[in-house]
Amino acid sequence: MRRALDIAIAGGEAGEVPVGALIVDSAGRLIAESRNAPIALHDPTAHAEILAIRAAGAAVTNYRLDGMTLYCTLEPCPMCAGALVNARLRRLVFGARDLRFGGVRSKFQIADSELLNHSVEIVEGVLGAECTEVLLGFFKSRR
Image (cartoon, rainbow, N blue to C red; front, side):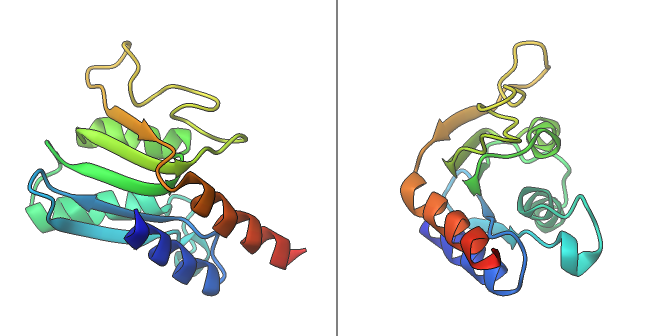
């Protein structure tokens, strides 16, 4: 999660909302990492999680990321939560809840819904205070 925080901070310095994500395989090897980039890429779907999932799929040449874990500094939105399920990620570890748009715990429970054909194991609150502080500092500097 500390690496995801470093990635998030770099994104904030580039003017993007500071969210960092990375994916590791079942042996703990780093497969992919990314940060938010919708402004730079002119792409509303360029969230850190989506970009990391795309990079991981390319790295392992498979659209399924069985057994892998995604670490993210912020609770994924509904779009990203759906992508976690479609990618068949085993586990999500996130830091801060997103009380306005959270798709995993705060507003919806998409990633581990019993209604879907795959369920992602969820661990929340890892370095949550630090993840929250990075986000709050970013938005405070914008006001």
